[in-house]
Structures are given as C-alpha cells and as structure tokens.
Image 1 (cartoon, one colour):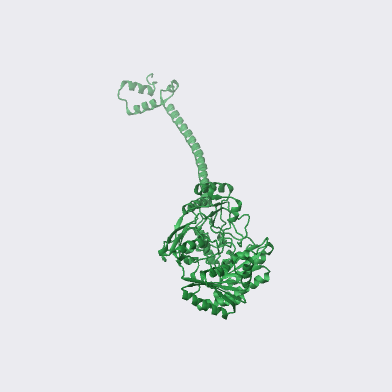
Image 2 (cartoon, one colour):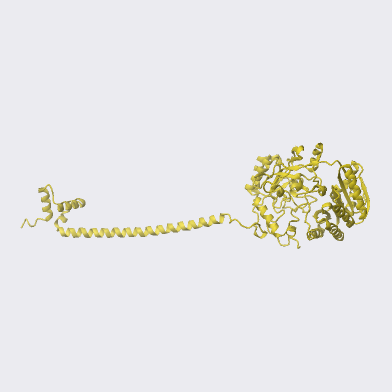
Length: 600
C-alpha cells in the first residue's frame, strides 16, 4: 500500500534516476517542469490532475489579461492615430489653401485686356523701400548723380507749357542720372525687384503730361547720355544717345553736308522724339520720326537689354519692334541708343511768306498746293492772333502783318526752287493772298522762318500773373482742314480766351495755343474737347505729333475703338506686367474715378 501512495511524479523521478534514457512522455514533463521551476511543498502535496487544472486555468486567465491589455492599447493607439490623421488632413488642407491663394492665376486665353479686367498696379513707394533703393542707386551712379531736391523733382514732373498741371503728389522720390545703357539696366533691375515705378526724362518739352510721376517712384534723367556715338557718313546713318538734341545733331552733321530732318520744338531731344513719334515743320516732305529711325537699344522693365535691328536701310527680319517703341512714350521700355537715318542737305533752300484775309482762304491755298503736287519742303500756318503775339513779343527783327499767314519752305536744285516759288505764288494769289514775300538770301530765310519757330514762346510771353498755357494738336485728312480750323478759331473767339492757331498744315496737322487762368479752366477744357472731338468725327486723330500722355488717353477709344485700345493694354502689360514704366500714360490700367472722364 505504501508503494501505491507514491505519486506518479515520484515514480517518474525514480525512473529518471534509474534510466539514463527517459520515455518521450517523461521527457516532455521534464521540459515543462524545467520551464516552470521546481514545485513547492504545497504543490507537491496536490494531485497531478489538480496541478494540471490549476496550471491551465492560470494560463487562460493570463491570456485573457493579455488580450484585455492588448485591446486597451489598440483602442488607445487607434484613437491616437485617428487624431494624428485628423491633424495631417487639416494641416494639408491649410497648406493647400495657402498655396492655392499664392499661386498665380490661370493664364488668360484672350487676345486683349479690357479695362474692366485689370487690377490696380501694386507698387511699393514706402519710405523704407525708397531709402533702401537710394543706396542701391548710389552704388550704381554715385551720390552726385542722384537728386532729391524739391525744385528739381518738380521740374522733372511738369512744365509751364504742359497741358497737365503739376500736382503735389505727382513728383518722384528722386531723380537718377545714369551715364550708360548698363547703368540704366541696373537701375531698372533695382526698381523691378523693389516694385518702384519709373518715369523717363530727356528734354522735357512734351506737352500732354507725358512725364508726370503719377505713381511717385523714380525719374531717370538721361542728361548725362548726350553723346553722338558713331557717324557712318557713307551709309547715311548716325548712332546717338537719348539726350542728344536735334539742333545740336544737325550742327555736327553739317560738317559732313548731312542733316536730320525731324524738327520739333526747340530743346527737344532724341529720346523724347522717339517716345512721342514727333515730326515738325519738315514732315510734309520728309515724314515723321518713324521714317528716320533704323534701330533702337531699349532697356525693358525688368532690366533686360534688347536691340531691335542692325543698320541696313531695310529689313524684313521678325517683328518690327523699332516701330513699336516709337510713339510708346516710355511705357514699354527706355530707349538708351538710337540709330537714325540722315540725308544729304539740299543744294538750295528758300522761304516764302504769304498773308491772307481769312483762315479759310489760307487753308484753301494749302489744299490747292498739296493737290497740285508741288514738292515743297514745308507749309505752316499762323493765324492773325499768333502774328500779333509775335509782333508784341518782339522776338524777331521784322514787323509782320497781323493776318492769317502761310510760311512755305522750298528745297532742291536752284532751278527747282525757283520753279516751286513761282507755282506757289500763283496759287496763293488765286485763293486771296494779300502779299507774297520770298527770301533772296540765307539771312532773309532765317528772318522769315524765325516767326514760325517763335510761335509758342511768343504766346507764352503774353501770360499774366496766374495764367497757364494749354497747347494741343489734332490732325485731319487734308480736305477737312479748312473746316476744322475755321470752326476751332470761332470757338476760341467766342470763349473770350487768348488763343492762336499754328500748324504743319501740309499734312493736315495744326495746333491751338490757349492762355487761361484757374477760373477759366473749364472753358479751355471745353475748347480742346470740341476740337479733338471734331477731328475724330472728321476721320482724323486726337494728336498728330504731341502724343497721348495723360490728357488725351480717354479719346483713344473714340478714335480707334475699345478693342484696339484693349489690344494696346495687353501689349503694355506683356512688356511691363508690374506697370512700372510711365504708368497711366496712353492707356489706363486702372478704372477712372466718377466724373474723371469728360462726356463725349
């Protein structure tokens, strides 16, 4: 019986001691015991079956506890990942929204830009930005070539003969004077990076508010760029910088028996002449500035330098960028060099002056001379008011008949000039000429023609304290010239203002010069408006040679149509997307304020 009380575990142990090779069952139990450790005395007193049940229950309990802990962790982990995922989605959405608002708008596919589709230019003319730019400019041109003196800033914004008055907020922060194309390019890079608007300035003789600094910013004065760079006499061309005056250029060309025909007002310089597409008294025979420019070197709004052509007399290579920049008034780029055509001086010249009873008679004479094909060099008209102003000013040595007067210029061989004079004299007499006087010497030519060149200045000399000058021009088909001159003269006479008629009537272009004070501004404005409106109605233009500037930009849609102006606006924004260059000139880039535009 004692043997029967021996536990199976003891038997197993005894067996282990007795046999060196235990059975498979015993080996499994041994491994299990080794993993669990030795049994306690209490365990040894329990049955094998009880121990087995207890061990199984404990293992199941532990597994349940492990599963519960795992489930808790999984729930916590799932919540954390959910929060993390929510944060990632929210952050990505915010970043996407910000990137979307900062991304450039989708490119337009239209060919034009309507005024309603524009957004106001965003410039930075804050004091801090301008002061920092001043330092950059100093490093480029030197402090001596930068001015912030108030009187100089105002002189670079308007003039006493401009039709756009000087406004207190339309002056630049500084006037910067470069000496080369490279310096101009560096200045423009600074202005482009800092979004500072720029106005160009050369002779300052333009009349329609062309160089008013409507957005402040910087004025680039080309005064130091005044050299004739190269004369190719055999090729009949010359390369000049923008601050070369046409009068000085002709003085230098005379030594080679050459001359440059465009002859606008005294003091005009090549840069401004290109900008406005000017002409002058010689335009009837020689054409306007467009016919005398071969190539241009231009600095664009971002500082890029381009050259539009080489020097051949003609070219069919690519777009005609030269003509595009002529007349652009500094809104598309800054001209730093110009290659100009020149021509041989005529063998002989002469001048004749003929007075008439009325402006219509004088205009009829012009119509007949042009229609007959007489190859004269110029035909100019000065009305009776203008001739009186010349006498009163005493700017010429001769006393003139105070009547509508035509000035003729002849050029060619001696026999051709003589024949032209005889033909014109006959036609003048047939249309009511009261006198006909022609020069017999060079001195008499200069004396007779001097009256024409002093026209503007002689009217300005009549100013009283508080008076202003408004000079404007239009052009019409030659057959309509007598009508519009007569109507304009009548409007001036009825207004009570002092105003004269002057013009390059050989090509249908004439000017009106008005004196007015502050109380008469509306009267002067109405005269100009009616004159321009009438010219457009007669299939003419708002300006023959002065350019658009600020004053005449709202007439362009009436003359050319809205879609044409929209195409011009697209061209402006293509070359100058930040609208830095002479902003607000020619085409509007921002909608006008109520009442700013006169009713048609």
